[in-house]
Each structure stands twice: as structure tokens, then as C-alpha cells.
Image (tube, rainbow, N blue to C red; front, side):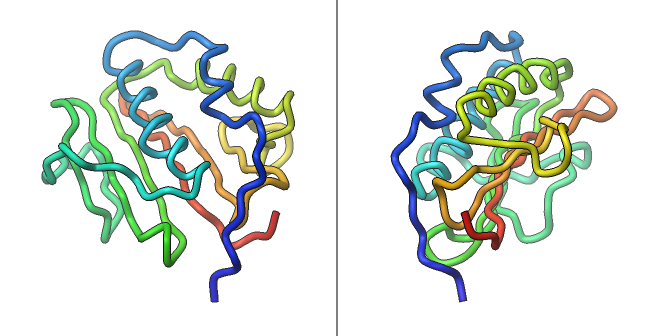
Length: 161
């Protein structure tokens, strides 16, 4: 059974986002989409807002997770949602044909770690971070880049804060 969901008011990730400039074009749009629709929604324990988005089949390069609902946001950007945050562990991923986001993500993750709202899941690797003591269930945010494609994953994990 899923533990009770809680959020302790803190300076959250979305507040920290305004501190760091991000890459332009598809990368910038992908980050804005992930920060608003995935990270921001999950930080507040809200479902992902897909209103106005049209479900679409993603191309093979997007590597869609089985069972995820997929939306095309732009020809090179897709949003994938799996699970209902109100009743089960959920995930939200933005995938884009864009490179160069890891450095920007690391800058943001470092700021989030400095104000103790997120920390590395393992060691000092800030490409995969998790909430610290303010949200149950915990949530993780992870960035991956490979062959010109970037995935920004936001997902809940069955760990207590």
C-alpha cells in the first residue's frame, strides 16, 4: 500500500529554476516542459496537466516506456506520463532531440542540492537526484543524453522521506 502523501513547504525546484539559464531551442523548450509539467506538478503532488495536448505515437528514438501515455509537444519533443499520482507511484518523462542539457541540468541540480531540497541518489552524481525530507513518497529527477536525444525523467519511488 502506498504511504500517505505529504509535502512540507520549502523553496522547491521551480523556485530554484529561475536562478539558472538554460540552453536554447528544443533543449530550452524541453526543460521548460519538464520543469512545469513533470517536476513542478510532482513537487506539489499534482497530476501532470496534459490539457490541450494531443496523444500521439512517439518515434522509435523516443524510447517510450511501456504503458506510458504519450503526447507530441513539438516535432522533436514528447511528454510521456505513466500512473495516476493520486493513487499510485507515477512517472513523467520529457524526451527531445536535443543535446547539451546535462550541463544546464547539473547547474540547476547543484543549486537544488545547496539549498537542501534535493540530493544525489548515489555518491556525488547530480544527474540523478531525489527529494530530501519534504515529500512522501520521495521523487527522483534524472537526465540522460545519448545519440542526440535527451530524456528528463521525473518519477516517484517507494521510499520514505
